[in-house]
Image 1 (spheres, helix red, strand yellow):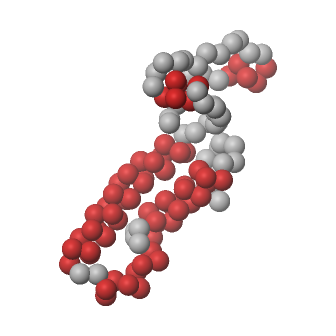
Image 2: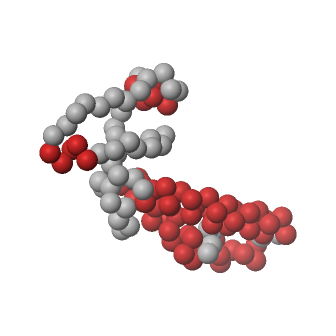
Image 3: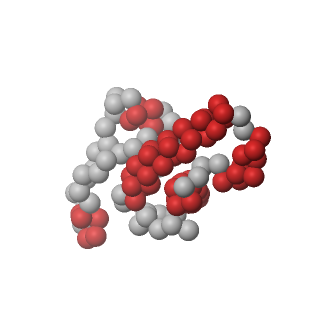
Length: 108
């Protein structure tokens, strides 16, 4: 399992592991490699496009996931309001270890 320094999240860890394996192996369609002979020319071009997309965007996503400091769990309707910019997240002065948190980027 990959460790990004954030609390355990089964979905994020599975996604990060899958992306890491795809990028490391250089192939997005790892389980379909045996079927390469069934692809026609357009299928191979599509496979190459997917491989390139996963390599480029997957690496970016992997780098973003590495910067996750903590997770914020928000229920509706607050999630939609935050996502749409209608609501802000406010904090209060904390003591002890919690006063070390600076500003953070929130990804939806």
